[in-house]
Length: 531
Image 1: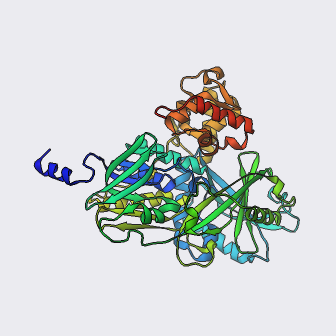
Image 2 (image 1 turned 60 degrees about the vertical axis):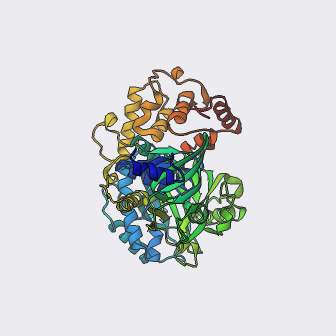
Image 3 (image 1 turned 120 degrees about the vertical axis):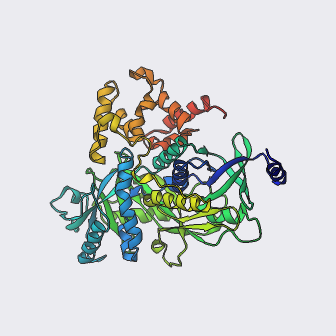
């Protein structure tokens, strides 16, 4: 160490703090995506997440990769075009967790005139190039199978394309890719204090193993609903300037899950008298997912909030609106599960929460060590948001490195070792299932398909060298074997039953309370190393 370095270390409040280029705060889709992009550009990255990956907003979406058809009514053409461009980029990057989905919009003349819908769908079809997704068309609901579950009063409708995503696994795949490209990722590790210096941020992180102090040349605030409160309460400026210059509007979106309302593979988009829309989507084979609501929350509601909860008024609203269309009414008794998430929307002074922009803003602050704050955003545009963020961080650090994610696969998404050259994301997945069953003829069909959906081309890492069902170990719950639990614990940061049953998968929806308890008991008997 030179004399100058010794002097600088002695003057630092944390001379032994571990150095990084970038500290990312938040393990939702934006934080994980940014960490992945930065690590792929060669930056030394540390991500700290207070809970588990995708514990909050990023596992509580409507699970759509979509342009946002309804945003056209608010003249959000730039946002819609950006999202439409991203649909097929994402579908190609991970065909095991994302796939095309056709949507049926029954026409209700009392809502919007047919010409307006046709004009909107024309724009939706042509604002961005499509290679995989078919365009929109009209449909006779009385003669089509998609009209069978609907009331007889709905005679015509429209069909268009978007995509479906397993949102929590999308976050996990970004985290895995970030780690494989050199990033360090900490879960259950809250950033409790962060102090800005002229050329670095000094952060204190409460990890399960104890307190850590780190130094980072730049800080990325991707704390989602907590982004504003993080700047106002935890991050400390070098001088007296305010770090938070924007405000968030917190809007709770809730969903219900009911037994399957229809047999076909299309989803529905329903227009409501309040000018909002809800979706009814095939879910987990046996169910229908219905959502979402828009309920504004005050900032103070975040204090002590461990998990957003749906309320009875929201359940009643979703049941009522779905029942306006389905011939068989949806009732409170039909609800088998529900979830809610808090969307952090950039405050644009809109009166109606449904009208608040879903676009994102990346705010740079260089009054000292670089700070980048992420305001707003939606899951469909996370990759572009991360790319833009990495460009800005590189610029602030004086080294704007090359973007790389647009043509890259997410972990498990490159199926070539199993199926050869890719053709279409949807048919490629079916080819993967066939190839896996040919190589592992002992795997039950339902289990093979579920494992392909969850892990894609990484399925071999889950199965290890197993050559028969017995070598998968104990069947802890139906279709869930010890070998998979050990993989999730070893490679996907799973630390308990909830991580596995409700985020790494949705097996909890299919299991009884006793079966869910068996998974919890397994984790209690087999704690992860260091726990």
